[in-house]
Structures are given as structure tokens and as C-alpha cells.
Length: 331
Image (tube, rainbow, N blue to C red; front, side):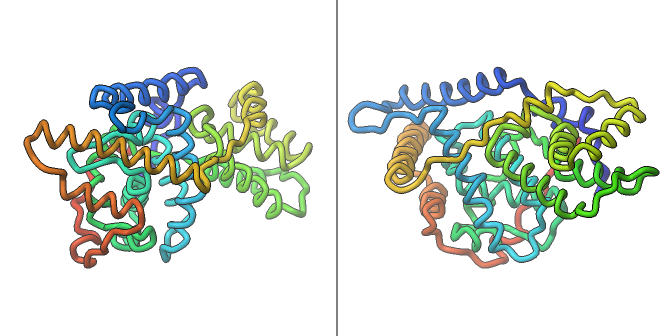
């Protein structure tokens, strides 16, 4: 695998890092654009459901990141932790510029199917050949064909930017540098410190916007200084000064004060929101079919079933590694 560029020179640093204000504005714009299309198609009138709000869309994405993705990954043999982390970042990115209400020529962007497709994309980007569309679809009780069909659309939503620097990688590098340096801090519980730091980062990546607001190095430095104690913090700052790397204390403080937000999609609310989303997709697909002079797309009927766990599996030959190799931008 080719080496990733440094964070500052990567697509992640250049195009997927925002201020809090810009991030909120982008989400509102994405939601408003989708809602405008739906209202033009009659949403909110004649028995058609109203468009989802930006906060409702974000709640759907949070559920995917905090619950659904882990459940699917746990059922896929030999799926490594880094691939899951990359998939989570790509999933968060994909729904910044595309709404969960959007439809494409391949069908609706059902959030759960998009999640599966991005897991497939992450496995390809990480060159994890033991994971394919058939295994992912089986774990998610989805249609492999639906998972593969959305790949061009999710790559376009990502602007083909698949380079992901994770704070977990940065943390491991920092801890190695400290422990193998000339004056390692005298700690006997490095494994416990590492476990607390990784748990903190995992929660931050799934329950906040940390991946869009801070560099991986800032996140790793913040949790290691926080959980490592005074001697570790002093050693970290001494190492940064020796390397001429300034420490952004404002960013560290902002991250450590970040609110971790869970999703609220349970029970009746989850069912109601799912039904509204299905109604929005149906309305846009009907409009799309009418414009094209065709009936409802067969592909979307399959993906609708798959999104609800009802899709019929295909043979491995039809779904596994059969999708063409990605042409992606790794920078």
C-alpha cells in the first residue's frame, strides 16, 4: 500500500477539516437543498411526509456510527479495527454533502445501505481482500447487489477522497515515541493508559464532530496528556518543543470540552423517522421515474427491502469481488 501523505498535505487536512460554524452551515445547506427538492415534488402536502430536519438527519447518522456499524462489523470475520475506523470517518463525510433523503439513478441513498457500501469502500482502500460485498451484505442482512450499486454514488459524495488519518494511529505513534525515547516517563501502566485513550478517541469519533474539527495529532496529544498524568504531559510537551511542533492549547481544551452526543433513535421515534424517510425516497423516486417515463426502478425496490433487512442474498459470484476496482484519490 502506498504511504499516506502527511495530514496537512492530505485531502483530509485540506478539504475535510472545518470550523464549527462552517460545519453547521454545510449540514444546513445539504438539508435545505434536499428539502427544497422534496417540497417541489409535493412533500408535506396531500398525505406526503414532510422532509426531515437537519437534526433528524444527523440523528440517523449518529445511530449508524454509534450502533449499526459496530453490529455489522462484529459479524464479519477478519475485519480489522482500522478498516472499521476508516469506514466510520467516510460515513460521517458522505452525509455532509449528501442528504439521507437524496436519490440517485441507482436508487435511494438508504443510510444503512450507504453504511454497508462505505464499509466495502474502506476495505478496498485498506486492501483488505478478505472482506467483500457478499460478506458485508450477509452481516447486515442486506442485498449485495444493492451494496455494490451505490458505490459510484458514495465515491462521488466523498469527492473520491479516501485518505483517512485516524487519531488512533497518531496515538500509537506518540506512545511509541515516548516509550522508546531517551527519557521515557516512568509509568508501569502503559497498557491501561493506552486503553483509556483509545476508548476516549473511539467515543469522540462516534459521538462528536472531532474528526472534522481537529487534526488527528491534536486529538491524540489531548487524550494522552489527559489520561497519562503530569509526567507524561511534561514529556509530551518537551518532545513537541524539541521537534519544533507548537502545541495548540486552545484546540486541546476545546476538544476535551466537547460534548459527546448519543442518538435518540429508539422505539416509536425510530420507526416514525424510518417511515418518513421511506416516504421521502418514494416521492423523489416517483418524480424521477415520471421524468424518465418509466415505472419505479427495480433497483430501488431491492434496496428498500435491503434497508429493512429483507433483501434476498445473491451468490458470491454475483456480489463478492465482482465490482470493478476503484479509481480513487488517496491524497
